[in-house]
Amino acid sequence: MAGNTFGKLFQVTTFGESHGGAVGCVVDGCPPGLEISEFDIQKDLDRRRPGQSKITSPRKEEDKIEILSGIFEGKTTGTPIMMMVKNKDARPEDYKILKTLFRPSHADFTFQKKFGIRDWRGSGRASARETLARVAAGAIAKKFLNEKLEMEFIASIEEVAGVKIKSNEETIKIIETAKKDGDSVGGVIKGVIKNVPVGLGEPVFDKLSADLGKAMLSIPAVKGFEIGSGFAGAKMRGSEHNDSFFTDEKGRIRTKTNFSGGIQGGISNGETIQFRVAFKPVSTIRKEQNTVDLNGQDVKLEVTGRHDPCVLPRVAPIVEAMAALTIMDHYLRSQAVIPAEAGIQSKITF
Image: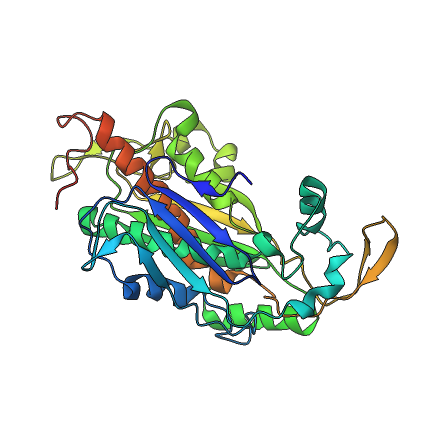
């Protein structure tokens, strides 16, 4: 099955299903000599892990990472890094009803039609559990980019159910209300990438903004992506939207505003990259819904099992990971094509 690998030079291939034996990834293209440990990766996995609060899925998983290859004496060797998390709390029997029914707005129908077969146990590959592999790979990219370029990746909740969020208490209250109703809510995550060097990204089809968009839209439940001013920029005049250049006290060319979101012409301009990601309400809800079975017959559906009423409390490390994987891939690509006297001057050294 194609579509399981992300990146060109820094490649990540994920494997596993929600209720299979394990979920994991193979990272290929990581430079040798980077100090990395299971602890470095576990920190981000713990942020994504289910069962940590009453507003997330009650599934109890330790998500304990195992590094099986590519690291020797605490450092990357330049060979493929294989990482895996074993599923401990799988309960496939909870999902037997889905064997013959299609959940509205879920991947059940499209997977069945495309492949003629699907893993109905908790959605299989369509489950958000697959994203733990992305988070593991992203932790490596984040560590590399932070150590070499002092880059930072930050994702936070901006909106829940259309409400601008000012505190965790607000988030909890909105999600708890939806959960009590047997329903779900969506929202918006704001992403920020700091200390990005000038020159990342390629012209035309491999624009940095385009690849960031692809990365975010590959996350389950994502329905929208915008960078910089996004759709609001369509309402502005050029005289308002243009980011004026100036030279700062260190002799660097900067912009006074950042409506471009840190990317111009598909290439990073050295300013902070800012973007927003829209997540739909979780499609698996407890309310009774109308649907059809494998034979196209109308049926009523009431879903049991363990599901998040809102994905936002757990998606920040996923958004950060996909951003880091995108930047890491473009950073390595930039080293091969940009001369030392132009753009990015730092080379990979250990």
